[in-house]
Image (cartoon, rainbow, N blue to C red):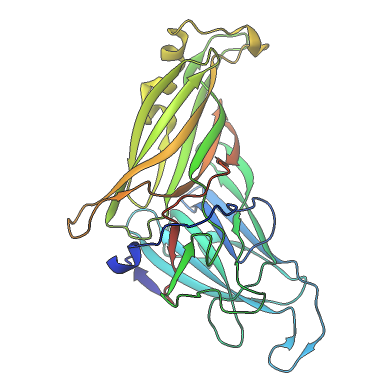
Length: 336
């Protein structure tokens, strides 16, 4: 089923978190999995895997086995925000692996998230046993990397309904599910562009950003604080509408090797010459409704993926997260 990604404006009036709660726990199982990128363009491909780590095979009259769960796969196209749905049933210790372009034949690129669904009520359920990862290959750029899904635990008791406020949304707010982090980090990057040898090479890195406002009519501005290895700070901003995959030096020249070399850069710590290095702090500034019907939202939440390529050979990791939770809370639609 394909639907336009649009949530009710009223759902965006999210409650402020009253007490500090842990953000998503990284590589531990959860009830919601976010894959910030799938790439099914010509010459590329993405292998998605989701695994049910629960091993309870005792009898259940409703589902035959107690450890059974349904998983709602929701693919969102990165160009037009159309939604494509699949449902897969996972028995205890079961794993499901599929090519994204076979699972969703209608889209070339975008993001995916998976929600644990009760096989009995067909509603989101607390089932903190799902893990996932993906392998992404890009023939044009010689990419081949693997990365884990971002897992969020349900905070309801196991087996209970996860959508506790019955608003039809996944609320990553520290009440329904674990909260999304307040800030994200690129732990290290090489200055973009050609670098002097030996050996000579070129660096081209890509940042994937996913807004968790839950409405594709919003344009989110993200602030960057960029640091070189002399601890000098520089600033940049970038706007996304729902989702974006962007080259790092298209965000700002502050990420380029040429710029960073001009800032009294100390390269002695680099050892083998790979040019300049730095890191960056990312923080949501504001999200503005481009249609003009809703008020602007401060501190918009987001998640992301960083892909760093040296002469076409790439490595990737999820953005690192702060301990602090985003007070607005993140939102994912779960239309069915």
